[in-house]
Length: 495
Ligand code: B12
Image 1 (cartoon, helix red, strand yellow):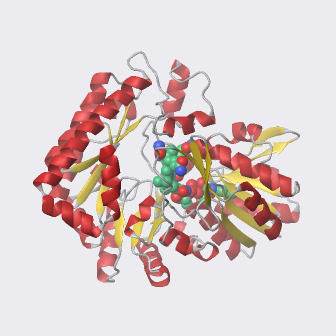
Image 2 (cartoon, helix red, strand yellow):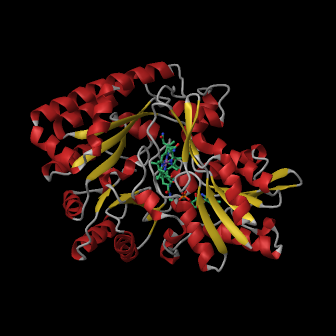
């Protein structure tokens, strides 16, 4: 009895960011739980792992193991079950392609798919994915263990909570599985089942997140109690915030530093600092244990879940930068449309405090929500530029994307704001550099949203350049610390 957990290749359009180089931690958590239960399990990262190539096809490049090699790996490893990751709607066609390859090798292999996309549309996914037998909804560790045991003992799939499967050709959805209460009962992700050096020293052209070298991502908590209209997280990881204890996190970091010489960590939590006290203890622990580590918050934290004391500890414990999710610079839109429950004054307070203690900052913004006028969008842009001007906060501006299952999607669908031919592939198209946002309302078109974003970016680049001219010392310091950034910066200015 053998389980193979497989991370499918991913496809990128020209001009888009190269692959980030993240570890497939979702699969690695599942692998660790299966291995602990005595299951023979392997992980094949057919995206970032060994044997990946860049396969150009017109406007797109698919990064990962070529299909024939994936088939050979499956033939060689002879799994009874193959678990496939399906994290993003925009990449789901690759999960479908690999499921077909698995069945071509041996139609008796049970194919199981999991991840945010399939969680949000389990039945719809099964209806399209003829080569996928089971969909795991939400957290996968114990559900996959149950599916594995069911396969072994011929137990009925109908008894397993948190899956969808096909019964007499029809997709059936079982009741949901309760969230994992105590995350500390989970073993560390199965680092031993992937080749860590691929992620710690990624080849040229991939792994933009690893520019500081020997970087890994880590998730220290799951779930978010907030209700932002565009976010799929509370639907997938739950609205209940569940966190590893500070002790677990510190031991985990120590383990990575000692065993794999990790130098940087990207905390990818849904709401890293929601429990301020817990995160303060983590920072204190890093300082007390003298762990030499740099870290960042690329997924963004809430500006109202920070204070100056914590920011100081964050800096002392190795924070290279702190990113916050602001979303809108218009308080009305933030309250009434996005429902983020965030006071913009707290964002300004955060920006001031961070600048005061010399901590690099960035903020995420989104424009193009139904309910917004172009004037509202400009308010966001002006807020972002003002924060850049006054406190040097980096601006990261996106167009609203209606992920399946979210309130944003439901509203857009109900009001006819989405393209009539919206498909999973539309999300991939929209994501490309030349792609268009998906939402059109009576107030704006996708082209207009893109134009506002382009103007905002041009002004932002001008401000950045002025900043470097005014503070050459600071610019040189950054350039020496992270020389890889220079090329990225020049490319950005030129684009
Ligand atoms: C880190 C991260 C990234 C990383 C890469 C992550 C990776 N896996 O490679 C980066 C920065 C590259 C990234 C990019 C994007 N991301 Co992102 N990302 C995340 C984030 C913050 C954390 C993911 C994570 O590591 N979670 C921790 C692990 C433990 O959980 P997990 O991966 O979900 O796995 C669990 C379950 O899903 C399940 N499971 C997963 N796989 C499998 C497989 C099997 C067989 C089984 C049984 C179960 C199973 O079991 C696991 C253990 O419980 C999530 C938010 C979230 N909480 O999901 C968003 C999230 C996944 N991203 C999202 C989006 C939209 C994007 C982008 C499209 C954003 C953009 N506009 O560019 C891009 C797409 C990139 C691409 N390559 O095309 C959305 C996805 C929604 C959707 N339906 O598409 C999410 C949910 C965020 C959100 N707020 O809605 N992302």
